[in-house]
Image (cartoon, rainbow over all chains, first blue to last red; front, side):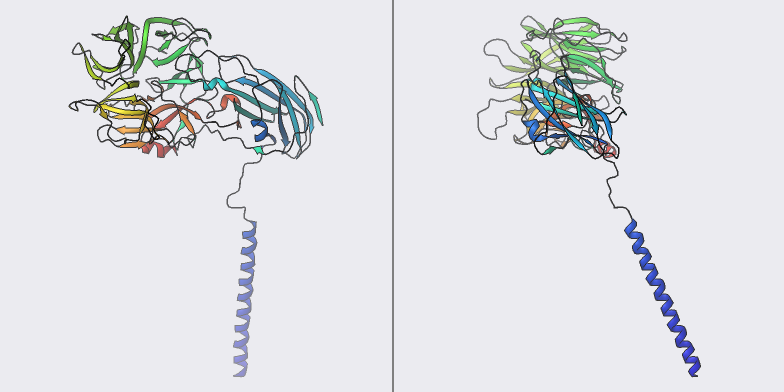
Length: 167
Length: 391
């Protein structure tokens, strides 16, 4: 009789030990899987490799006059260095009947991965010729000046920003 | 590391300052600052006005900086139809002739130094591929209204101290309405059945007053409907709906806070005279109106009260129910007589708007792809179901 009781006790103990081990393994497994999940709402769009950073205070300080200093920063957010990054700047009126556009250019010979470089343009922002006021046209449109700055690499990587200056 | 500077450029380290984030400038029908479902139909700089849909609904024409362009509705390919110095002020499609456009412009191709003329000339753009030629149709035009149903354009012509009306179709030959009215027509539109036209007239002389007249081609007569008070001015064109004639009048600014300088009035049969339009509320500031092709509704650019942002509204003229079609917070919307255009099927309204800029603004796009920073055309779905589908 004692032998039978001992056998049953041993079997029960073995059952609970095995079940506990499986439960422990299952919990460990699920924890590992959960920690490997990607974030729920990741920003999947990669950062653009070439970036132009403009400063609000600096733009606000620009005036519609010659010899204005326009500073910006060009950044390399990629893992490789860029050689010969060209920055072109167009200053143009909002009136599309006017052909006058002012062009400027700066080159950055080497931009290492993860690095930024500050660039300065000295530009003429004096008012481009305004058309006559035809009847019914608001006058505000002719008071704006546009700047379009573009950075390009020989490999074809580029970044662009347009700035509207409401003078 | 910095290698070379060309032209007038130099380089130096700038002081630390706060970086400015570019304004998103989306081209899709997600959110362009006017609410869900609204999508831009044009982009880039230039003073745009007078949108006009081709009767088939495939293309749209408009004025940019005094010249006329057209483009497919869903593509960026812009085709210029006049010289850049044309001095165009309005454009409308004429159906029945391929690529037919009627253009209202300066008497002569203008130069930038030309002063504004008192009257304009109607031209028909020739449809030859790549041609910028136009054919002179009529002189002495004071205003025009498209008639999408017939594919024609209704013109008001000055004839000495009097004005008369003419309808121009695909042939370019004007059909003159019987009757004349003393004074200058400042705005006009057709009745829904197209048998009659309603005009706002400024009478001549030092005591000039605005009047509302009806011209009937079927009954061969012209009739005075209302004479406004000496301080009231009709803004834009009166609109003839199936439930009365609506017009915007500017009242003298008495300087009191909360004054409503622009109000919407209705003239209806049996009303005994103009009344404030029912349904919009006494604080509503109406800036521009245009009736729907079926004559049942009125599109209104307006403000709920003098301190609120302008929006596009739709008024059911039978019930007085007013619905808001845009949810604008920071855009200015043009409200000129030709800046509000219904599609022929009445499903969409085209408006012209741009962002209000309080300072420099940057956009992550080339200048020609920037939308909200300049006056551009936007297509607004009229029915809620269409707006929902577009989300």
